[in-house]
Amino acid sequence: MATTTKQSSNLLKLIILALLGTISMMLMFLNFPLPMLPQYLKVDFSEVPALIAALIFSPGAGIIVEAVKNLLYLIYTGAGDPIGIASNFLAGVLFVVPVSMLYHKFKGVKSLVSGLVTGTVVMAVGMGLLNYFVLLPAYSMFMGWESMSDQVKLVTVTGGILPFNVIKGIVIGALFVPLFIKLKPWLEKKRMAAS
Image 1 (cartoon, rainbow, N blue to C red):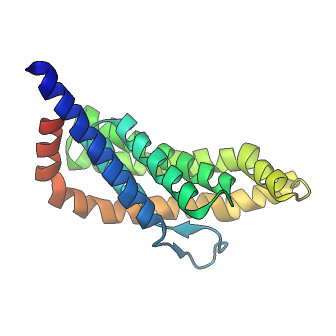
Image 2: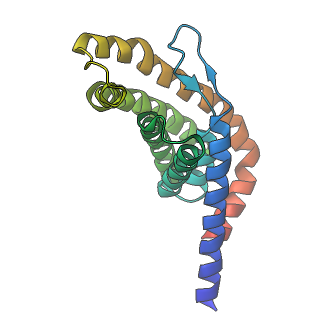
């Protein structure tokens, strides 16, 4: 009997993660550029379902939703920009994992807010470093461009990528906190059902 209950609990978890990953992928299409920043940097709300998964279950669940989202997006749009998809996945993981870890450790709205601030800082700094050392050189190579000079990479990171990720974290956090307050009873019920 316990095995059957555990299997149905695992199946429910798998269904929830697949559903949240699909919703997340659809939210990627509802994006908008920020004024004063490069047009290719667009804010979307696809991290919200990953945050929900990470808060219901664990940081690993948030990573799974991020992976499902990006895999579905890659399949749907074709492999036109694998570096951008890898970048989106990394940014999502860098944002969602700290939020989830702090929330699960301390619980409550205060830990969520401090997690969102921490996640924003980790995402902004992490993506700045990853872009400077890995993603921008990989993108240049993928596009067949000459490799970027250190000066160009530094300007791109400090003038575009870093402020973009800070703004993105603030926008998602501002949307997510009131949503979380409304969803908290439901999230607690789902967490109890899944455990």
